[in-house]
Amino acid sequence: MRELCVEDCERCPELVDSRSRIVDGVGPPDADLLFVGEAPGENEDESGEPFVGRSGTVLDDALRDAGLDRSDVRITNCVRCRPPDNRDPTSEELANCRGYLETEIDRVDPDVIVTLGKVPSQHLLGRDVAVTSEAGDLSDVTIEGKPRRVLVSVHPAATLYDRSQRDTFEETIARAAGFLDDDGGQSRLGEF
Ligand code: URA
Image (cartoon, rainbow, N blue to C red; front, top):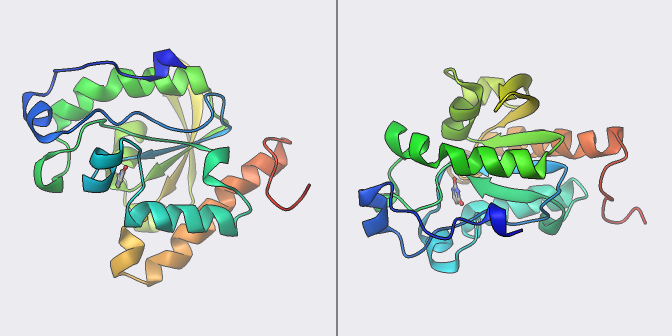
């Protein structure tokens, strides 16, 4: 869907310099689950696809364990350009990119938005979030005038240096997959 792609954008001068390309979301334009990360890293900047590096492998594995394939879900980021030295996006950069994310949420109209890590969780819930203790919690929020359900998750990268976060992450992804069962959403691998 063309309207889910950002053709060109120069709102963040520092990111225009640090990016190789704009990294748009991937996955079905009508996915029931929308995963939202922070910003592209080096691998994503090179390939043009969100979550393809080590974090992406962790996400893919957890999705598979939950009976889902990466192609079943939509994956995007709060900010579509790689920040220099992989720093967190600034509040100005988040604000500059917010409209693109809101358009994506509006068009995809997912049943559940899964926020991967602190930055997207705080960005979409509009408050401080302690991701480790709130992981797996579902919140109701209004985004662009529409009610949305947001499921907080730790960032997959957190599981790489803290093994104890792996269970938390996998349980959250399994919970997300469970929402598809509840409402007869998309098919799950191996069941048909
Ligand atoms: N981390 C993110 O938050 N997003 C990506 O696309 C990759 C790593």
